[in-house]
Each structure stands twice: as C-alpha cells, then as structure tokens.
Length: 119
Image (tube, rainbow, N blue to C red; front, top):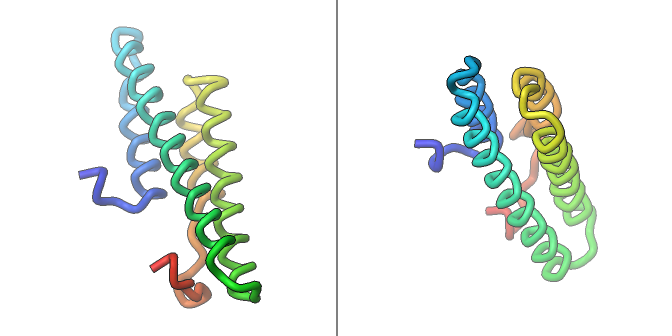
C-alpha cells in the first residue's frame, strides 16, 4: 500500500509506523523500521538527483526550468536533513515526524507549473 503513495506521504506513513515500536521489547523491530526508512530516503535522493540531471540537460534555460530545479533542490535538502537526522538518533522519530511535515510539503498545486519531464 505504501508504494502507491506520493513520496512525502510514504515517508510520513513510514515514520508513524516506526513510532509504534516504543517498548524495549520491540527495539529491534524499530531499528529495522528506521533502517528501511533510511533506505527509502536514499532511493528518493537518488531519484531526485537523476531527475535534476535530466531537467538540467534537456531543458533550455528559462524561468520555468529554474523554478523546477529550485523545487528539486529544496526537496533534496529536506531529504538530506531527514537522512542525517535518522542516522544520528533513531529515538527521535516523533520529533522527526513533526519536522518533516513542516519542512517537506509540496507547494499548492495552483502555484506549480509542471515541466515536461515532471509529468
């Protein structure tokens, strides 16, 4: 089911699933859940880097291209911060959830203008 969600929703859902493992008995499962989430974030970073490269090579310099590349760079920064925070302290997932929700939100759809490669 998680695979059908957008990246942001998938990561939030994974954080919430990891939060349910709070007892000491479930610490191994919690660690594995966070490892899985870190793996998902690394895949997302890789995908965003590939998309950035595709956009920068294919599109002619324009305001639309700069906006699309700016959105991708912002997402990459937030993914990098999330990855770093997960690697530092796996017990902070509840704090990470609220930080992630406030930092990694999409612009309203009405303000976005999709570029060909983003479709």
